Each structure stands twice: as C-alpha cells, then as structure tokens.
Length: 172
Picture (cartoon, rainbow, N blue to C red):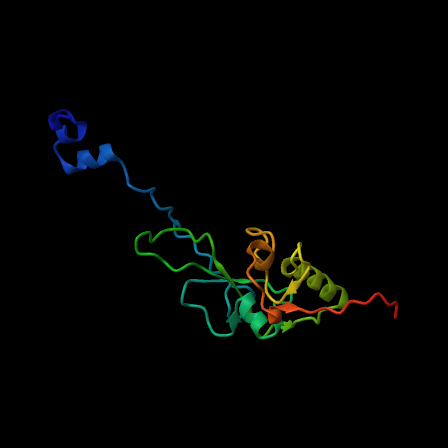
C-alpha cells in the first residue's frame, strides 16, 4: 500500500491524527463533586462511606468477623471505596468493600442438628465416590473425572485418605 494514499499520512498535525484515530479507551466517568460521605447518626462519628486508607480502627469485613467468632447482627455496612488508580483517577467504584463495626457485632449462633446434618450431606456428595462408594477426607474431582483416582485410572488410594465406615442396620 502506498503511504501517501493512507488517510493518516495525509493529515498534517498530531491533533488531526488523534481525531481520526479516536480515543484508545472510553472516557472515565466523573463524580461531578458528589461525595458519599454522610453521617450515619449524629452521635456517631463514623460515616457511612470512606475512601481507601481513611477508615478508622474497629471495623472488619464479614470474613474477619467470622475469624473472630462474630456476625454482623443486622447492622448497616460501612462502605470502603476502591483504591484510586493513577491511570483512571475519576472512575466510579463498582466493587466496594463492606465493613462492619466490631463493637456492634454479636457472637455466631451455634449450629443446630438439622443444619449440621444438611452440611454433612452436602459434604458427603463432594467426598463420596459414586462408583466405589468410598468417602474420602478430601473433595473429589467429580466434575472432571467423575470418580476417585482409583476408579478413574487405577491409581491405588492410600487407606488413610478415606473413611472406613462400619454400617449397621440396627434400629437402636
């Protein structure tokens, strides 16, 4: 192709070339001066949203609360907005982190027998081989292999890796 006939080479200035090529990425949305910082209640100095790195102590995520043996207990979450990026400074945070006050959190409720039974059945479906009916201590690759390794390709299973069950049908 002749470079003289190419439309970009015929344009003289860099500004004209940029207008023809167009932007390389979409224009970032602007916040137009709107701030999410609002007081949750007048007696509480905590606000309902914080920018990255400005949240005070005493706040935790759900996972952090669970590690402490606590639950949010119905309190409204406090939003921690995304970290600002240098290449897109005006972007709107689409995936904020939700924080909860540790002092308002309550202890985790104990699991009931029905919940424990349901959880055991769900884990049994993931750890029991459908072919040999052994229940392993780890989850099996049922989506990819459809069974344990021993049933799939003959790799012998370590006897300590599965549960030796003693079943009885006594009505006691």
